[in-house]
Image (cartoon, rainbow, N blue to C red; front, side, top):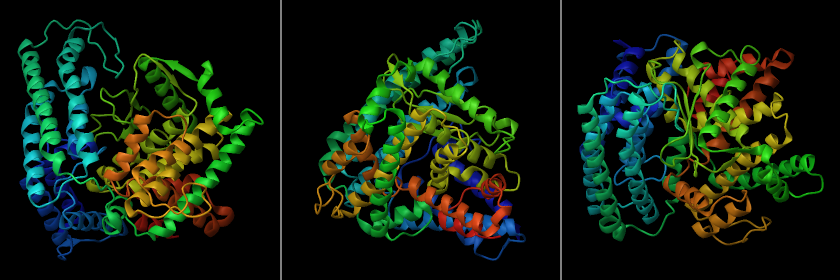
Length: 574
């Protein structure tokens, strides 16, 4: 017999060795110099680990002796069974994605090492040197999958080629960052938060040269891989994007940990979108009475009070928002552990959206919010920023996942597994945006409208589009939008234009590519939020006058990340 904790520890170690890129995102220590093998052998090894660990878990040789063990075993089993199902469905063969595929994970693995004065430059050099081999392994996998008739949709292939051509400029900037850290003015801070070291004359010239040559080789490999994608793979890539109901249900299982009536959920998405837009009308009326939402948004965009100039000033603005939320909530609505009282707000060097990464398990990396700025010198509009910052920071992901990393009552797998449960995590993030309204933290009505427009409306539209596009459903009567037609990417773009603000066309096109590359991920936000809200309401009805919101949150977060079905079950226990 072995303990469940021992099995979990062993699995995390073996998993991290086989998938260093995902391990880096999860904050697992010990693999900082390596990259994932995205070739067929690496993929087979990861599948083999999932099967072997699941077999051991079910063998009767693992001691489950407490209620905490029962929950932990269910969490691990759920993940392993889903991973096995994904491998058996051959989902990872020839896989490319717009937001979290192999190319994006390779880029992120390097970015995460870029920590200013705290950068491990030996690890950076090692990962840069490993990048050409990792791309070669991925090419081998894509070619083998193509031989078996499995090629990602053309839009995913071309999106990845574009990203491969964007990354080299960042990689080639790393040697200069090494110089800046060693020789820059003491305390100087660049737009990404890198801190100058104040003229360290002991900079290692040999390491600097190795960084330069490794970056050049990695950049060349990326250019060659982009040419392969465009010239060799794209001609074989299907134009069809929709992946159909069976693949979509597998995505629901993967990202949400539940099963859904997809047509009912599709209809609910339209209802939720209409409800939120009515709420937006009310919020806009409080700002500029008599004006429609579009006019109010335009007025706020033009108001100098809601503008910050330049990436550096915007990063400082984000940091101030994050710090103030922690100060306001700690000891009142949440008890925030000391290691979580700082969030590192950063501007990514390559456009990669807005996202949060939890602290490393050894706390060597702080919880970090990455926020893309398209033009580092331009004005950045801020009236919609607080809601998103609450989602990514406190009381959102930073509190949720940071507290999980520090929770000694969870085993190691549970502590680092937040990245694997988007329904739980993104649902909590969206719930946190709404919670801050309930707690009175949108004192400026523009910030309330920003929360609705920047988070709620967009995420409800995603439910409609994600399901509608992949299942190619008809647009129902009564929506006022191409009623009776079946969804296409072109209709999806038009729908987003109608249900978002004046976003750049490229940003909307990226959203469509994102949905079509990751079936069911985009619905994790709204469907996860729905489970959190329903569970809270059930607890409120059950406990009556004794209901304590702070205690509910503490108990809920102490469970750690898990699929939505399991979350609903555990929160229903008195």
